[in-house]
Amino acid sequence: MWLELNIRRRMEAPGQAFMLDVQLQCTQRRVVLFGPSGAGKSLTLKAIAGLLRPHAGQVRLGETTLFDAARGIQLPPQQRRLGYVFQDYALFPHLSVRQNIAFGLHRGWFNPSRRGVDPEVEHWMSALRIDHLAERMPAQLSGGQRQRTALARALVTRPQALLLDEPFAALDHALRDHLRQELIGVLDATDIPLLLISHDPVDVGMFGQQVLELADGRIRHR
Image (tube, rainbow, N blue to C red; front, side, top):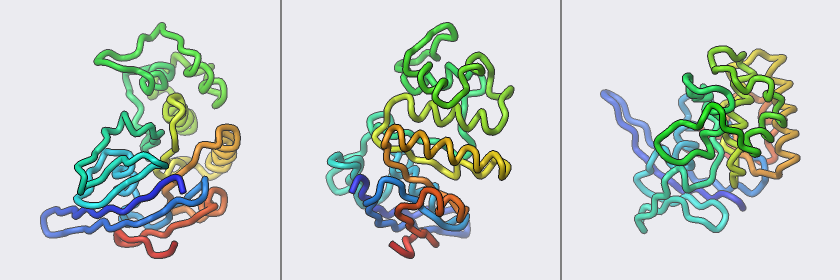
């Protein structure tokens, strides 16, 4: 079991409330959290990544406690060693492809140098076939190129696990199939465990060694 999660978080907005109450154990290397929009999938991923603090519960990655409400443990995102790809890819519009990827390795207040070359960055640009795009800005990229850039940024730190939030939703069907195959190749080569959230049955079929269905903030099937 590489990930264990038991969290609760109440979300409130004017006139409405939502309770996230999720218990899951990832026993396979590739896990799909499946469910409709509004089920709480992205909130769950953010809680694992440290971008959302639950009100109660625990999050464990292998032998490491990432969050424990009772013990006051809340590791910041940069200490969790997780590769996170957002649904909109969240690339920095003022940074080139190379700089966006290097940002995952960067420490401090300043952006990565436009002239800097890091072997890890070059490796992942080559592996994902975007090395020829190194100097381009996100606005100059296609949807698939942006997705590869975001994935390279997530992988460049050699994370302990990969968290993907609807990574293919914004792409056309032909490109989705192609990039799914590319991702499988990356996972086979690195053996990095994956938690992918999706509402697409094709993702379940291709990546779901273990499938967990989320509805109304709770796991329905395990």
